[in-house]
Structure formats: structure tokens, C-alpha cells
Image (cartoon, rainbow, N blue to C red; front, side, top):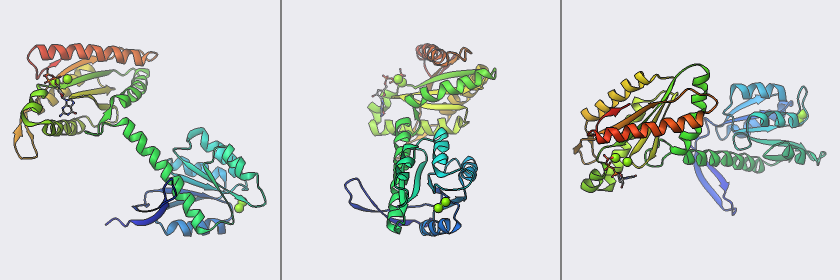
Amino acid sequence: YVPKETVQSFDYVGRLLVRLRDNRNVKILLVDDAKSSRTFMLALLARHNFNVLEADNGKTALKVIQQHPDIKVVVTDNEMPEMNGINLVSEIRKSYSSDQMAIIGISGTNALSLSARFLKNGANDYLTKPFSHEEFFTRIFRNLEFIENVDKAKYAANHDFLTDLTNRRAFFELAPALAQQAFTQDQSCCIAIMDLDKFKSINDTYGHDTGDEVLVEMAKRLKSHFREQTIITSRFGGEEFCVFFSNVSKDEAAGRLEFFRHHLETFAFELSNGQPLAVTTSIGLSAIKPDSDNTQLVIDQAISQADQALYQAKHQGRNLLVE
Ligand code: GH3
Ligand code: MG
Ligand code: MG
Ligand code: MG
Ligand code: MG
């Protein structure tokens, strides 16, 4: 049972929205040297089941953030011993952008320029003391929504909607960094391109929806065979997939790919109507030339070599791995 909160918030034209959300994994950090002030805000946040962390100055806040880099919102006072709120904001912004970690500065009515200073130093928002419960919650939820919407947009930009694999764009963003890391440690990397065999005839025989089902099942099997963090599995487009192996030799990759090819050949897909369907794939494999200064270029070269190998696999009768 997951307890969910009914939350009132507002959309951009100010209409009241009531939605369900589960806040237990949402971390909020309260930074204030006055315990009474933290206790007040903590009690408010507890009503919505947030995971609340506390710090009594900027320095301790930075330590808490180091241990919990997934904090979504920081609410901070300014005047505190050791490190004040403005300096805390500047420090946080060296490592976390405003769309990763929202910061709400608290300013007193006797320091009118403080809210502007908070914003200039990278805070997303501010609260002026004294504030009502409603204003506190509105600011918290607005900022949380902003962070979550950016997260969603980033996820959508980097994943294929049908299969939920990383897409081509994400591949070219992630692979060079992983390759560079591997090459500086003298490890090898390689790339495989896979293309389903006679996929057009699956579409033509069973319909486009069945074709989609096959792509989803293929992605599932890829994910379960190549799940390490150093391996990227992407849908490159259509019925074409790319597997990037970091810290894996070409021989080892060939062994694993051959195992996967054989697995596909052996275990027919089961369509939603229960019907079995034999699906095979052709695979081209290429090592990436170790060059940590030109990762982008050597990755492009390896892709074009893997493509040529794939073309040969098709030419030699399909359901084959060619290096
Ligand atoms: P080969 O063995 O030579 O690769 O033959 P093939 O039929 O697999 O290759 P071809 O390139 O002729 O056909 C690929 C087909 O994939 C054509 C296209 O309509 C279909 N396709 C591309 N994207 C999708 C998709 O998202 N869903 C479905 N159902 N079909 C798709
Ligand atoms: Mg204070
Ligand atoms: Mg203070
Ligand atoms: Mg194709
Ligand atoms: Mg094909």
C-alpha cells in the first residue's frame, strides 16, 4: 500500500489542480541556525510525508548534500554561523544547476535587498518572513514541479518512447565519456549494430502493431542480456539497435553477442494473442580504436565498420554475427 497525498497546486493560468503524489522519497533540506524555525517548517512538510533533512548552517548543509545528492529542494535562511545562505547558494550552484536542485532563500522583511541577492546568486525562489502555510506550500510545490518537469523532459529526450531504451541522441552523449574513461585505464571498447531480419515481412504479415510488439520484446531481451552500467543499449531507429561495450574485449563481446543471437533464434517471441513468432537478428561488431583524445571520431569510425559487418551478415544469409 502506497499512501498518497492529495495536493493542491496551480497550473500556469492559475487554475487549481488537485493531484495525487507520493512524497516519501522526495528529499527536502531545511537550513537554519534557529531550531524553532526548522521545527516549524519540518512540521509543515511532515504533513505531506516529505523526507526532510536538516542542517544548522551552510557548511553542514554542504555535507548533507554530499551524502544526499538527490535532494530536490533546499530551503535556507541567510544569517547563520560558519557559512551564510547566500554563500551556500553559490557553493551549491558550482555542482548542481537550478533545474537539478531548487533553492528557496528565506529573507526577513527588514532586509529588502536580500531576496534579490538570493536570486542573483542562483536561488530559484524566496520566502519573506513571516509567511503563511499556504505560501510556504505553494513555493515548495511549484519548485518541486519545476524540477520534476525538467526531469521528465530530459528522460523523454533521451529515451525511445516505444521501447524505453536509450535513443540515438543519448547514445552519442553517453558513449564518448564512457570510452574516454575506459581508454585512460587501458581498457578496450567495442560497438555492435543489430538489425532484425526480414522485419518488414513481420509488419506485412501480422500488422504494424505486432511489429511494435516485437520491437518491445526485443528491447526487453536486450535489457536483460546487457544490463551492466558500462554497457549502453540503444534503439538507433526502426528495427536497428546498438550495443556499446565499455571495458569489454572484442572477443568477449563476440561471445556475448553470439549467445544473444542464439537465444533469439532458440526462444520464439510470444505475441499478445499467444501465437509464437520466430525472430532473428543480424549483428555487425567492431572494436573502437583506443584514442582518448578523439572518442567521438573513433566511435563514428567503429559504427561505420560495424555497419559494413552488418551488411555482410545480411548478405551471407542473415541470423549471423560478423566482425
Ligand atoms: P533485412 O533483413 O534486410 O533487414 O530486412 P527488413 O525487412 O528487416 O528491412 P527493411 O529495412 O526493408 O524494413 C524495415 C522495416 O521496419 C520497414 C519499416 O516500416 C519498419 N519499421 C521501422 N520502424 C518501425 C516501428 O517503429 N514499428 C514498426 N512496426 N515497424 C517499423
Ligand atoms: Mg533565521
Ligand atoms: Mg539565522
Ligand atoms: Mg533496418
Ligand atoms: Mg531489418
